[in-house]
Length: 410
Image 1 (tube, one colour):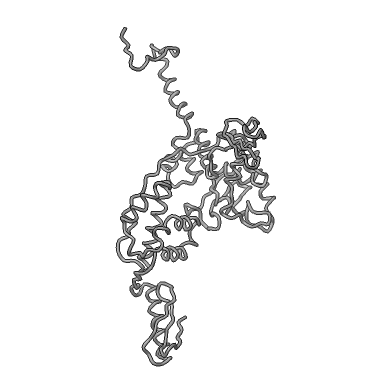
Image 2 (cartoon, rainbow, N blue to C red):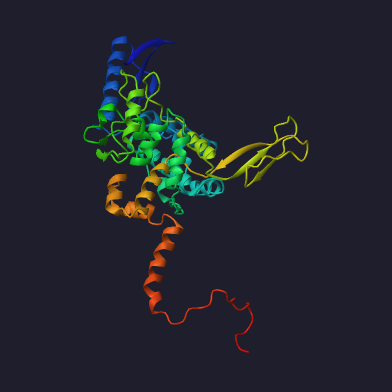
């Protein structure tokens, strides 16, 4: 609420402007009544500007850091990911933070991103580009910026398409056996349903219908909607049912969540499920190698090997400590595992799309179109089975191809 006070023979007015920032200005009125009337007028004008009934004032001396703080204060609580703000501050503030918005041009952003491409992935650069574009769009709506959005001129980087990582059926069983008992129901649900991490942590008891064998996916973490903003129903596999019963028994009666802390509270969104997964993979031998480390103080010797056979340090003869190096899988790859195993079992693509809850089968086909070399080999061998009966000349497998640079003529 606006207020007035007298200082050095002048009446001053303190009010919150249309941008939500407190301002204190001197007036030329001689009485407190006149100052109060002016304060009310300024407050009403700011309110009309906030409601869009009058044009917003343009503030040209705001810095990029101030813009980020304002944007985050208004939109941050609504975002599912809370990591973009510290990530943006770490990479953008050193260069842009103290600059006024009018000093930031498209060419300067291009130079900045040319440097960022040396250390960041294309996807990370695209996230930063989107962040700047949204921040300037917010500034334009709030009257903090006038002109073209400088980030709009930046081209999005092409993200290389990689094959999704996944676990084979025997590896899924091995991981479930080695996951701690308190996490087994959650991991089993992830493998059998393809639900995302936030959807699992936000799953409530009312979403389970064990009598009809269904799970309703309607929320993620603390949000009332999922990533796709739609509610879906999934079937409960026969093998999954006992895991869910165990989870319900372990969940306190006072808790509304299926997978929760011992006191019934919901797990935070940053709970390290990937660490649990990788530890179980290491114990199951789903690794790319082993790191042999000498733990004697001051030695520091370490070497990478393909096996876990015990060896001794070549420097001090102490027995080396063996650490498994799991395959590079994230917790989200449990979802890829669900899709890959369904497709390998010849489940129709449209059905897999429904299980993963993609809005378009093209998304499913684009992500999981190539799920392994063994599947491609089986496909081309089917072609060979069709052609083989009609082949009259089959090359001898034992014959060696001619050396490069030599002629076939005798």
